[in-house]
Image (cartoon, rainbow, N blue to C red; front, side, top):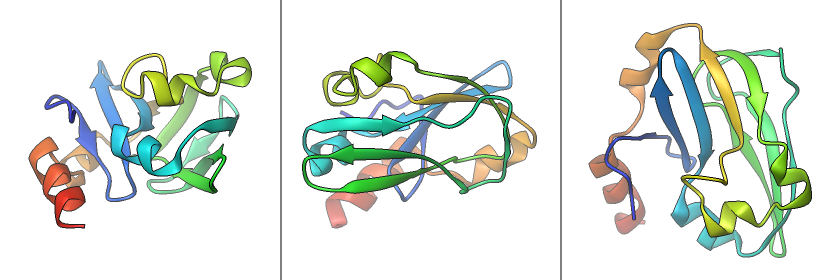
Length: 126
C-alpha cells in the first residue's frame, strides 16, 4: 500500500506534485503506527516554510506526532475537513486524509525525497 507515483520522507510524509503544487499527508504505515487519530493541528495558509520544518501536529490515542513539510514553499491550502473528521487520515491516508498543499519554491528538492521502493525498504527493514 505504497503508491508508486508519490515521493516520501524518512519521517513518513508523502507528497504528490502537480503543476508546482505539492499535496502532503502521512503514509498508511504512519497512520497505522499512530492508531486512531483524534485531532489534527493544521498549518496556517500563506505561511512560508523551509524543507523539513514542523508545520502540523497529528494527535492519536497513542501519541502526538509532528508533521514536517517535505519541501520548501508557501502553504496555500489546508484540509479543513480534518477539523471535524481527523479520522480521514486513518480511513484514506493518500486521498481524503491529505493535510496541506504547498507551492514549491525549489522543485529541485523533490529529487532528495525517497521513491516508493526506497520508502518500502525503509519501513520493512525497520
